Amino acid sequence: MKVFITGGAGFIGSACAKKLMDRGDQVVMIDNFNDYYDPSLKEARIKKFLHGYKFKLYRGDIRDEKLIERIFKKEKIDKVIHLAAMAGVRNSLLNPKLYLDVNVMGSLNLLEAAVKYKIKNFVFASSSSVYGNNKKTPFSETDNVDTQISPYAASKKADELLAHVYHHIYGLNITALRFFTVYGPWGRPDMALCLFTDAITHDRPINVFNRGKMSRNFSYIDDIVSGTLTVLDKCTGYGVMNIGGDKEETLMRYIEVLEENMGKKAKKKMLPMQPGDVPTTVADIKKLRKLGWAPSTRIEKGIKNWVAWYNEYYTQQ
Image 1: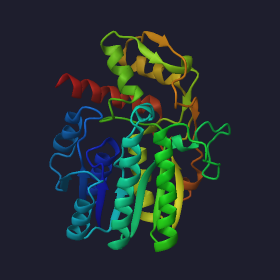
Image 2: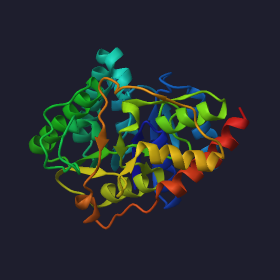
Image 3: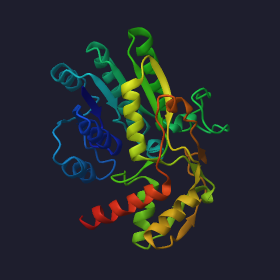
């Protein structure tokens, strides 16, 4: 089949593209290579990580309605993995209009095209941040998600609501995947793991928010990709699904494993909680497990792989 990936030069997008092509699918991608983080990493994913693969790449913005129309009309797409978005909770507090514009209006353009061109299945990235300060753990898809605490989270909840409308009115098969703290090789430099690794490498202190009293389902990229493609292949109707690791890990353990793999202790700057952030995000993944998927990578292996990639990639820069 031919799959259209938005955010194709991104962390998850490029990894999904590679896996799809490995199994024989055709891939068409769009990415605007914005400067939210260093675009050279996005370029490297295309030129190095996906070296030797044959795919079509459009350099453009999902808010460009005419471009999206042209792509869908020309490429005869079967399914969509929509990952393009302005990411990051903290930055959304500084640029709320941009986040709502890209994440909601951009998604709306894609939903319109998906209906017009009869897309078979549409999978898109939501976020664990939609749960806000949910006190009940693990977070379940049946929990109330009406109390987001950042513009980023609110934009993702809005996307879920729009998705339901387009399923209800037009019968579009569409699934929202609520990602939980994805990490691994080729990961984003604004994420904690890269920030920590860079700081430790250069003898700078790391910022440990909420004084370390945080925990996450850290989700390794390979598990996220396999889960995303499982949903792309198997889901029908409308659905919301958590996708993440199956073990809750404390932030301090995460840092400890990183220190072990780097052979170096971090200098820790203990700080209060950041606005818009939450102390705990833990996923109930029973719903996705029923499709035959299960995460398999613990942080001990995942962080080892990350450090090896970091040392290779950043020493070449």
